[in-house]
Length: 285
Figure 1 (cartoon, helix red, strand yellow):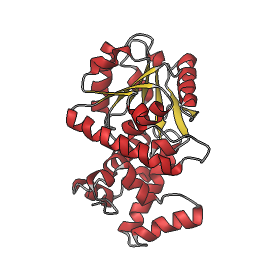
Figure 2 (cartoon, helix red, strand yellow):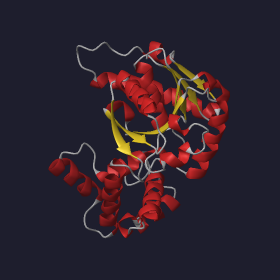
Figure 3 (cartoon, one colour):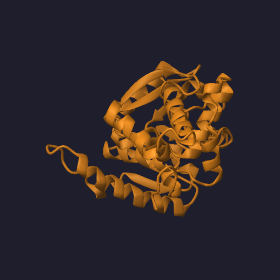
Figure 4 (spheres, helix red, strand yellow):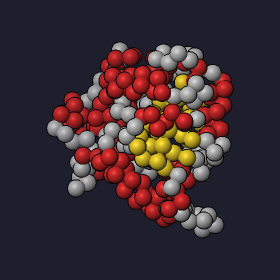
């Protein structure tokens, strides 16, 4: 499937990681975002990430060719450029109103055979599929951050998602060296129903003065073998994204265990969104 063209909507952290993974595997990528300034920054971050990946490659593996990989990626602000895509992965902000607007636009542009994947951590795939005249071609693909380093992806089957769509998505992932794990369309799927609780409880522990940010993360890394602690993970994902995901889960399940910690709300209100803003539970400035 290396001749497949993949449209990637959204050149943020996730979109950049997805573009990198599939371009390295030989796929042609069309990366779309709102402005040339965003795309210029995305290009810069992609080049840095590809260079950084050389530090983790096995000795027997050939070094990634930066020029060859970047030539696989087309940067554009024009949605019409994904008209020729065989597969589309949407990665816009985790808010229903924004995703709805993007998918209504894509429904008018994409060719009938193009499969559509929404990269979401909590929003219903069935709801997104309802926007399309053919919802059988819509599924969810929940990539984990950082995308290039995570070997698995949650593949979410909506109510109308066809087996053909699931098979094509899995083949695409396999071609990029990733494993698709099929889960059903429920809020939070598998990973985020557990992860959001862990992160939220860790924030409550900071609020309650149980331990320092650093020590909470150290316990998870040293005692449980996690590569990152929950608060480091929160900064990586983005505090605003964590807050929205918890709000979706709380609204969906009506269970107080998903109620966002007041400290999280306060930090988001203060503009402390984690790595992308330069400061969250840790400082990156």
